Every structure is written in structure tokens, then in C-alpha cells.
Length: 230
Image 1 (cartoon, one colour):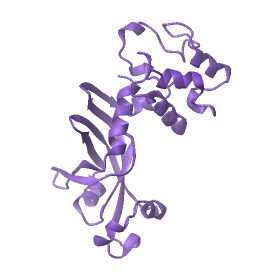
Image 2: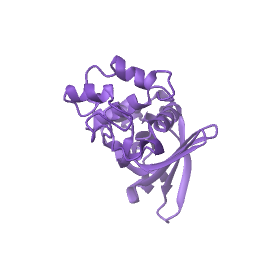
Image 3: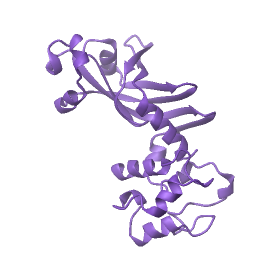
Image 4: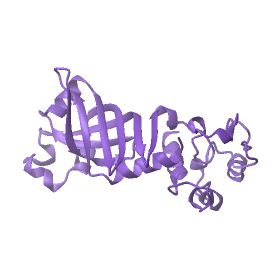
């Protein structure tokens, strides 16, 4: 697995307007329904609007464990995690739209208007014939200077390489100019640099060689995620 499939999964989630959401009813049975997805942050989190007295909100009060599935054609992004009811009025106002007035006639302050945040804990992906299963914690911590997921990268060519972070910018294939630059500037990874992406990193991520990201920019997204969560 590498950052490419995560970029593809992020694109599917961020472009989707709806998702299948499964919660656990108080009777112990799973209950799945289609929900409009709001403010998605790739595979990491998203929001849903529902009614306070409805099955989704009431189930989450009793059991926060939730599964959310996005799909595009034959590609599938299944996420498991936890939901929480949002009380922050600024978020509720941000997610409010005029179409909701039909269901919540008193507007954003209607007691039945409920906003729920889903945060993923694990992911199961099937995209372009590739399968990837992992915990979100497996990719949350920086694993390289440039955004490659060295700890979960399945590449026999790497051999015993521990990655540029542990090998002073000299992975199995030789000295890496991106890693050396990052080390010289004193950054943990390139996402901490105000010049990100510099010309060197941009070429590594968005160039046309066989070793560049496919889709382009995959490792740049990982760097942005790491920089937010450092």
C-alpha cells in the first residue's frame, strides 16, 4: 500500500454527495441508510445532518460505533469508526442549507436539527482492483520526509530499508534530494516547510516518471495531513 490509493480514496469521498451509514440499534441489530455527506475530510472524517429523535442520533447515543461506505462505480471505500453529536452552533450554522427547512421548520436552532460528526478509525479500500486494509493510526504519524508511507509500503525492492527518516536521507536507492533538503532545514517532514511543495518535491510527486505519484499529488496530501496532526 502507498499514498496513491489513499489519494484515490480521498477523491472518492470528497466528491461524493451521499454515503451508506450503518449504526447499531438499541436492539443490537445493524441499521443502514443513505445519508447526505457534508464537509468530508477524505477518509478521515465527515458530517451528517439528521433528526434528534431519529434512529441515527438515538443509536449513536447508545453506541457510537459506526460504519460509513462511499462508492464510485466499482470502487469502494468502507470506513469504521465513531460518531458524536455536535453541539457547536458555529458548525451547525456552517452545515445548514435552505433545503433543510422542510425538515426543520424552526431553522438552525430547531431542537430536532442534529449534526453528527464521524471520525474514522480503520479503512477497507477496493480501488482500481487494489485492496488495502489499515487502521487510520497506521498512517497518521510521519513515515518519511516526502510523504511516502514507508511503514506500510509493500515493495520487495526496498529490502531492509527503514526509510529516509531513519537512514539520514539515504534510502535503499541512494541519497534523496528531498530528504537532504528537509534535514538541512531542520524539518521533521516537508509538510512543515513554508515552501511546500518546492520544485524538487513537486517533481517527485507530480512529475511523469514511473516513480511519481499516480494520481499526482498523493504524497502532498499525506504531508498536509501530517502537518495538521503533528
